[in-house]
Each structure stands twice: as C-alpha cells, then as structure tokens.
Image (cartoon, rainbow, N blue to C red; front, side, top):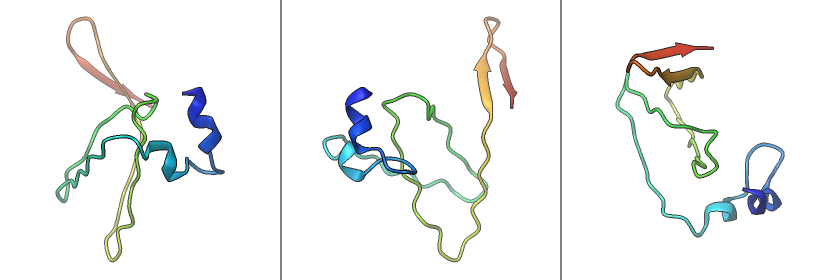
Length: 74
C-alpha cells in the first residue's frame, strides 16, 4: 500500500508498518511448509531466526488452471 512505503527499510519494512494489525504465529513441523502470497500487500510477514537448526527456503510460481489443476514453475 502506498501509505506503507514510509516504513520501508533497505530490506523489508519497519515493525510499525503492522503495529495495528492482528498477528498470527505459525510454526511448521519438520519437513512441513507454509504457502502464502507474499505479493499481496496484506501479507506482511517475518521469519524469525532458527538457532541451531537448518532452514531451507525456495520460491516458485503456483497457479490453479481453469480445469482445477495446480501448476508450478519458476
């Protein structure tokens, strides 16, 4: 959102950008994952540190076709 740009930092946004928003904490199980749309301006997110654990991330494009099939590409 244009009003959020005042809180932009070199990487990400300052915490006050979402100070007025409801917070939800999700913790995937080992070998699990979370899918969400990071390009939707309502989906600000933070990934906390994983001390003593290995964290692997990847990105991809995922879509639902008109026939109901999921397709992925990068």
